[in-house]
Length: 347
Ligand code: SAH
Ligand code: SF4
Image (tube, rainbow, N blue to C red):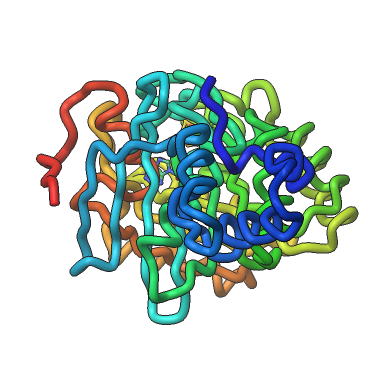
């Protein structure tokens, strides 16, 4: 595989730049991490060196599609990697923050029935460099605003690519200076990996994609629940809280008639309440392989109010980028070669 320049630690860079004045390492490092520049664009170093580095480390990501919606506030890129695999990255601008939603794998092997990425299947793991380059690409596109948040909610299951996820979080924290509150890893619930992650002492926020709080329904929506049922997941969440003292979030994609009933609300309130978790409600985004509707907006609000009355901290997340298949769960339309819900407009 062609290495990404973001695979390098500063000692690797020092070796690579042996023979150059010492301060060059610092200049290149600063250009890459603080300024988020393409290596060929670090103008503080001489042109010949820049060109040498750019030839040795071509960008990992080639843009094959670039679409925007929400009056330009949401932007999605489809990137082709060196071996032809494709991934998607979404940039979302809000009044108070700029968030990038990154992919941790090309595809996903977890097979959640309602998720377009799950329907498309797994291609391969991403490398640390391929993940970091998504962040840096988005940071450049966000300028002059500063990219403030990174969420691992694009394609793939970050805890099924554990070393890369941990490596990316560490580097974004240490080298880019991003704070724990601004880095969110979302997982479908790989219980042992949640425990292992908790023990790393990493600066991050954990979101668990729950979607159902009884095993029968969760087995249908999230096949991994057969391996790590709700009781096992609960144990992992308790350990996470005990080791990190950091709040947990639960993601809940509201699906009409499936997990938006009063019974589902009470099950969720019991499960989340005992863990003092925050609940994020996301109306389901329609995907070609799952012919069930998202919950109507009146019911979404009833469901939210009901949870609040049961003492749960709850937010309704709006679905950015739905019209360009950029919302949660829709990231697969190009990768699997299926027709997307909408025609992708090139910019
Ligand atoms: N694999 C990880 C992270 C990527 S999925 C996980 O499952 O958590 C990011 C989020 O999108 C998850 O909460 C997932 O459940 C949600 N999602 C997937 N398909 C969706 C859909 N069709 N509508 C709404 N949310 C969806
Ligand atoms: Fe994978 Fe997450 Fe989609 Fe499930 S919801 S298939 S874990 S990306």
